[in-house]
Length: 491
Image (cartoon, rainbow, N blue to C red; front, side):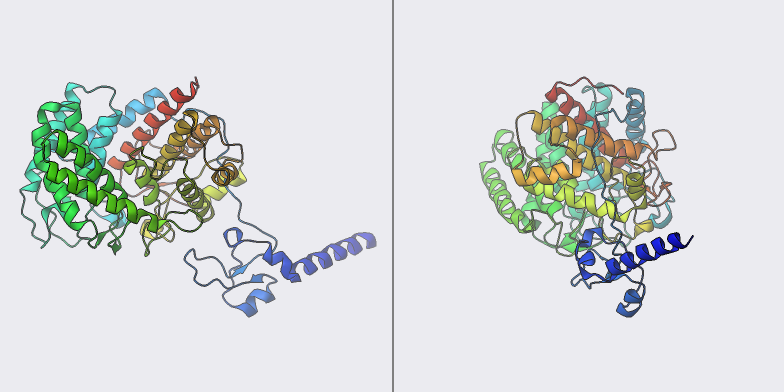
């Protein structure tokens, strides 16, 4: 046995030398660090770990980390496989429709859940959620049926009523976040106010409805001009973020979606109302917003939400909701790819579920709200994971239509995919994300707001309407990508 002890001793000596070799530490990037769980340099070096302070440290990277371990990198490399069957998508639509025109009020309930743990009661009509959900309903319904028209007419009537409500909170009624169901009064309690993104989002949906049903165009214009006049006056005023937690006068989500509302509103004002003065004004403010968006792009192309909340998946949602197909943050642009890759890496590191997937050889990434989120434990969100898949499907469609990323962006994307960049592989990447999420849907197609980052348990608000809206939109984008690439895919 002497030879065995000799061999083990040689191995240990080599291991010790490697730990003491500073070059081993320098080979591990901040993104790859595995926390050694020592709070000071003395205990860190005593544990034979690497010590390298990071300041500033917005990503909360470990200062003390192992020299012989690296965080596993997630991959999205997968062949296309349909994430949901037709019957499952019919169930998703059924749950979605149940939350529209709730109690015959015309309002969209955020979730039919009065007790969601730390979030409290979700049984309110948020202006933002309602606008996004109704637009998704119009986009994803198989046809403009009598039922779709009925729900939209009811929502239009609600929008007209809401603009005539009086705000008890000292702000414009157009900046109120949420309303009581079924009465429609603004929520009187404490909340993050004002929320300046709602009017633009509602305008986008109203104009889309007027296009589908031209007889309501003048009713829609009466609302749109009030909403967009508010945007013109308040686009750079301080407001709340998408998650109603921090305030800034310069959120990417707000400004990118406002830009779309104003550009569409300019055309609407001209063609529907003959209001050339407003058309010109809306177009000019949209240009101002367009020019300001570059301030959100870092040197590596990553797009940040705001200076006080940089790493935020609200940006991915913005890319999907605010796109005008005019080349500004196009799906295969360097900025969009850098942001998708950066957020994928961040949540890959942060969530045990994602690290478990890597260890099991399962492709996919679950996405949360932002780096350092602590709400209900800070977990993956269904609506944002679906939004990331939606973006990948849009990239697949764009690629199939002949658009190609720059060589630098293509290299970034190929690393995330673990494969070459192609329409087929981008389609498979979107599927990998949704299939990983689908694994944790344990109550049929009922979807809670969050998935526990460690256990995979469904958490927080039950039957969140925005979840269904984003899953429906993602699967619609998948069909478009499929058709563009002329694929016939099977479950």
